[in-house]
Amino acid sequence: MGIQTPFHEGELAVQARAGETAIAARNGRIIQDSLPPSAFGFIGQQRLVVLSTVDRHDRPWVSLVSGHPGFLQATDESTMILDFDQAWLHAGDPLWTNLQHGHRFGMLLIEFSTRRRFRVNGTAQLGQSEIRLRVREAFGNCPKYIQRREATGDLEIPGSIGETRTGEELHPEQQELIRAADTLFVGSLSPVGNADASHRGGQPGFVQVLDSRTLRIPDYPGNGMFQTFGNLELHPGAGILFPSFAGEPQLQLIGEAGVRWDLGDPTGLTGGTQRFWDFHVEGVVETPIPSGEGWEFLDYSPFNPR
Image 1 (tube, rainbow, N blue to C red):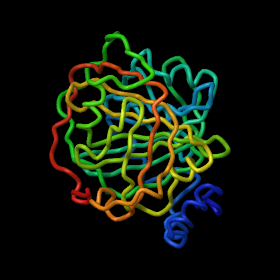
Image 2 (image 1 turned 90 degrees about the vertical axis):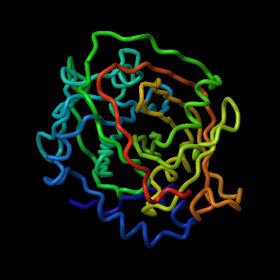
Image 3 (image 1 turned 30 degrees about the vertical axis):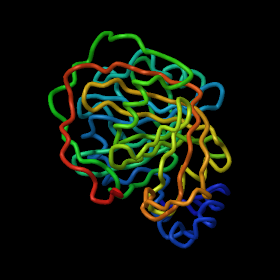
């Protein structure tokens, strides 16, 4: 069923500043406190899931779990099971440690080929070979800014793979990966600590690398609810993940983010909103990915500012 008051004070403040309070109130009716039965099939056919989890310093990390269709299943309207016997996540990923001492998660299910996406948040319990996910909020998102890709090949779930590479700033090769990216995922926290995972996309180059520790990202027109920006209004800690689509390493970043309302946009980088957000890097994890499954690029979103 719907949630009577779906927005916290940070979201309400950002909605008001952007002049989208009425739009947010209308769109907020889609936020439910359980999974709709219509989502069960979509959940079960996914080959990847994006998860935001929280470390002991209250920083959100974004992780991407890949698997065979069926590795994630909704067992009822309040529960999902993620089976790691059918999925893969690097042994060095922060998710493992995060869920040992905390239980908050944000989830994004995204199907690139159809541009469908679905968001969930709640609590998670890490077991021997599975994660049991209890739903607190669930809702669908629009297809804007998703680049269409088709999964190719079959994921080979390895027993082990190369080591992660860590640092406190972006080295030149990592900066080039980011400049070429057309997709990222962002994790944030609400004022009561609920985790959230969201998607951002655009033409390659939409993420600006200002220096080895600073990124600038345009904010395009959306659904007016401003969940990520509302969280950042009250809790600037954030995480970013740049996924791998063509064998390049995956990048996970943690740091602090803030919305820039004061920059202006004379060249139209924001699609008319004149909003950006800056991300200040405090930590980097670079991870190799397993072979097998790849992604064939089909086309860019027609909504991307050009």
